[in-house]
Amino acid sequence: MIQRPPSPHDSHQPNRQRAQKMASAILYTLLVLLALWIVRGFIPAVAWACVISIALWPLLQRVAGQRWLKGRTTVIATCFTAVIMLLVVLPVGLGIAQAASEARDLTAWFQSVQENGIPMPDFVMHLPFGSQQIATWWHANLDHSLRESPAMKGLHGHAVVTIGQRFGARALHVVVLFGFMLVTLFVILQAGPRLPNALMKGARRAFGADGAQLVQRMAVAVRGTVTGLIVVGLGEGLLLGVAYGVIGVPHAALLALVTAVAAMLPFCAPIVFCGAALWLLVQASVAGAIGLLVFGFVVVFVAEHFVRPVLIGNSTRLPFLLVLFGILGGAETFGLLGLFIGPALMTVLMVLWTDWVRQ
Image 1 (cartoon, rainbow, N blue to C red):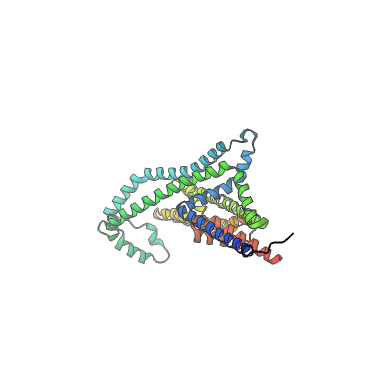
Image 2: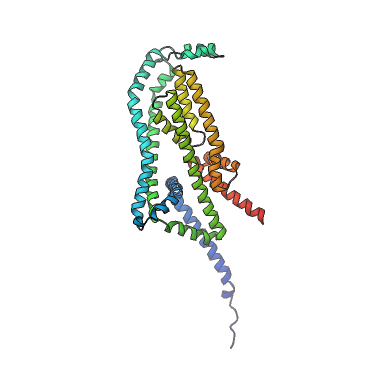
């Protein structure tokens, strides 16, 4: 048999295939970036839905495993989504209703302040130091009619209208994102085990078995972070709620709920109980204010520095310092989503370091 000599076309075939693969990779990358740019406004909603679904996945599997619920993914997804919606809407609704009920008293107090000023609390004169300076400043700025003060004039100006418009637009944007988050969460939960199986298959194909295992550990880190934030937040809210009731802070139950929500974010609970302590000071309850401050800071210190890092670190096998850096650094970089992204990235860092040391 006479062999045909290789043609120049055959010799250039491997180069052409490599060029086509490179061009395909560039095209796919550009298309993915274009798609992400188009939906960039909804990425936070999708990210929140992913975080919530990862946290709920073990419970979802347990519920779906019940004999009388097998195959009813739509019913399960609807129930889970409705529960998440109620957990967010009910506290916000209660807060708005309580604020509306207090609006009349607040308006009357504001009008009284405009006409008569704010009287200086009696405890100021009993302070161990600085009482004279505080009293002088108070008499010069607050204990007379505030109608002509620059601050009160500013409250009736164009700045208030602008702030109100911006707040309304921001609130509407949050409501829309929350709606899209619920829709995305429903779709994820309705997909059931098919979605994580497809994701793991894609991760193995793209990054190998090690990459798929790393994705699993990141999901565990997110789940552990959600557990740590919720458990610690509810614990702080319960303990401080008891303190509010004992000391005599009004609306102790509602304030405990607000404290629990704030405590789910690192170091945000002091904003609530410090406000309550300030109210006690204005009411001349110095001992109650000091007791609430001391008790609150002790609870927050123990919860934020010991309980929360232990809960998150045990699930992710991360050291205390990496958990703390992940939570705080993630929140600073990515906002609220960073609370979950940070520990997940610290998990990646820990896995890479462990693999490097073992080589």
